[in-house]
Image 1 (cartoon, rainbow, N blue to C red):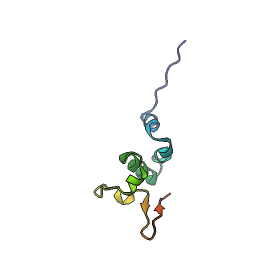
Image 2: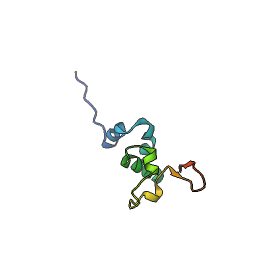
Image 3: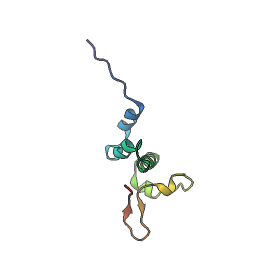
Image 4: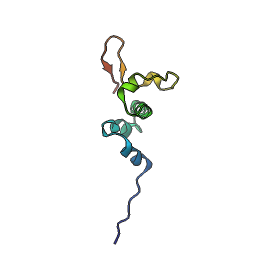
Length: 81
């Protein structure tokens, strides 16, 4: 008897393509606006934190909400939770 392969949802398929270190934002994105913005920025920049912080797309509607922005008074990276 052959086992039937259970089809994965589109969300599960996409999750498997995301680097494991970046999956938590995608998992939380359906319940958290902050996580949704973070997941979108990660996908847009190829899952690179530095590229998100140095984003060169100020016309993007999510630009001011993007994660990993530097605090104006220090060189530390600020990440909202």
